[in-house]
Image (cartoon, rainbow, N blue to C red):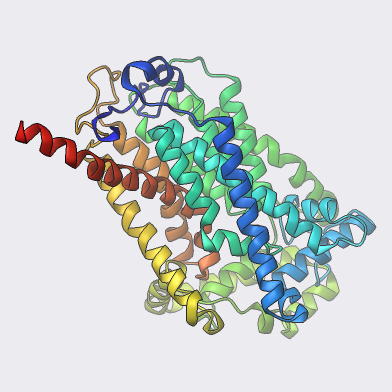
Length: 462
């Protein structure tokens, strides 16, 4: 029974050493991988859920209401078409560095001539399927195949991930790239020499940042948390430095591209200023409403001059002034933003009725509760038998804490970022697959305890 199985052997810094785990699999009956057949089923389940949901929406609603695009979707399609026509990612203001380039390029490449949104949606269903597979692989590597299968199924069926996979937004591709980065971290063994594995982590992190600039915060948080957890491994900081160097090198071509067109070094985008202003400006209420700001005379003047660097600097300075002049208001807004970000039901009124409200509340509150239970069990070292294996290496006396840190890092980043920036359910989505790994672990523990009770009673009676 899973309740009586011990946690696989761990490496020096507390993260799972897959080679050591494999060596102890037979003895411990804990498999740190999921079979190809099972991963295929999880993949097909995820793709089917996403395509089926879009088909259901199309049958239930009018064609116009289903195909209506959000402002950000329209912008990405515009940038993709502009790239196919001119080789530049121009948005509605004519700015060329307003977004990171990988997602518009993905949309342009998948969408084909004319950039067909239907083709992009279908491709994102496949990416969503790969995301579920990556979640299964991550969960299995950390906590065994049963947890991995459970995590993959939870990610495959997550109603918000299912819904957003049909929207032409960065979420689906970004989450896949983030899970890939987290998964590659597990392949970095503490007893191995510093080398290509760290470079691979850095390359995956750079690709994640190329999808969305917020990926930089996630990547740095991952490297820092790993170094802190691996504090007894003197090479952990060297590993982090190497991965960081690869990230910087990976971003260099984009910075040079921006310099050639803007005559300024822009490592990420020129959108940071207005994004911050949207969160803390005098019009801010916790939600996002850039429409009025973009229609202002100031923005039009910057657009006419083509001065997107000045546009970025102007709104950064305005946002900082707002924070300095009224810090209490900013603090009050932070609570509202976090409420919106971690809300168990949709923030929009049109999504707060009927089955949508019930499913959302039940699913989200269930994942939150189970993730909390899973984190608590891991922090207490309850891997199955209730105690850690005696054969763990030095420095890994509490590998459960390392696992919790690894899985909760995205949630911490989301919370810190969106206490300042605007709050929305879509911005918490990168944290959900990691929380669902914790939830799957709690489910496996609960199911194992229920299954073990009859045999325990029989033994006691005997």
